[in-house]
Amino acid sequence: MEDIKSMLPEELSSGLTAMGEPKYRGGQIFTWMHRGAESFSEMTNLSRSLRDKLADRYFLTVPQIVRKQVSKEDGTIKYLWRLLDGNCVESVLMRYRHGNTVCISTQAGCRMGCIFCASSSVGFVRNLSPSEMLDQVIFSEKDTGEKVSNIVLMGIGEPLDNFDGVIRFLKLVNEPNGLAIGMRHISLSTCGLTEKIDKLATYRLQLTLSISLHAPDDLTRSKLMPANRSNGVDSLFEACRRYYEATGRRISYEYALIDGVNDSDAQADLLVKRLKTAPGHVNLIPLNCVPGSELQPSKRLEEFRRRLERQGVNVTVRRRLGSDIEAACGQLRRKSLSQKTEED
Image 1 (cartoon, one colour):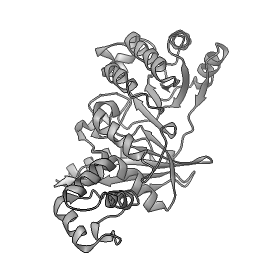
Image 2 (image 1 turned 120 degrees about the horizontal axis):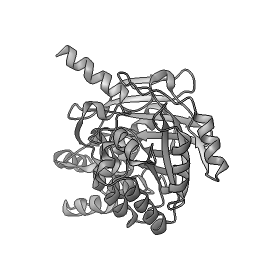
Image 3 (image 1 turned 120 degrees about the vertical axis):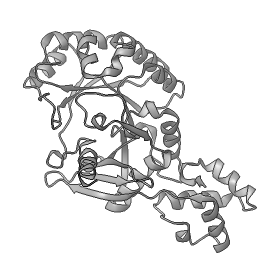
Image 4 (image 1 turned 90 degrees about the vertical axis):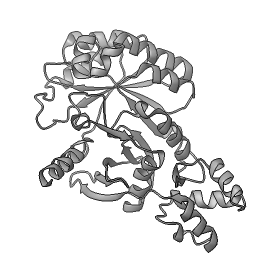
């Protein structure tokens, strides 16, 4: 059986034509799926015979909420979803004055091995399908009854390690008969897979590319992020420069400040120098503590921020949303896996 929700509208229409059905039915089915239909029987403007044919040929992905945590501080909601094969992933809905943002996962687990990230600690299982990425948005809307206006691909997994699936997801989420979320309302975060950044640039998408940088020098970055050992910071910033020249989109550099590791004045100055080759803004992040890790949040966040600003860098400090529910992706999934292991 085929995954119908991962199909583009033209593919869906072609499939229906081959079944002897009119093309316009594809648009109806597409809209039903993106409104959160959980079975073909719900699609009441289709004939019973067509619904039966669809059920024989296709399957619909429907995630189940394993756990839902709501922050008492700011209303942030963290979901742990169970997929059809039993794997679990997380997403987080964050409420802002400009609208709701959902941070989604792109993989079950992660192979990048960043030592400050809970997602990598239990290893990589598989890529998510485009439908499984869509479902995190669709069913967050369905559960809350609230529209999602922005998407961040910054949950569990490395988006560019699931390149083809992510590109198809982006096309689907942009469709006017579906969620219709524009590219300028989407951010994609990567640890810096340079070849994939170059490949992404060829699509000329107007999304925001976020680089999980976290250190401006190879020695520190390679300790924090093993993926850096393949290319290095020089190659990463060269890829960022090429991306900026190809798309015209300024890059966001994510920088989690870690006490005594990446928060020195010398590292701030080196970061300023790096940014001259690939313009963008720096998003400083108060470190989320991961159980079992010795890494601690920096005590020099304000000093680091001011040093960058004095040298002309555009800097923001990320708000800490959902801190009372451990909203950093990976922590809830890791707890769930630990509990399952204990039960087994």
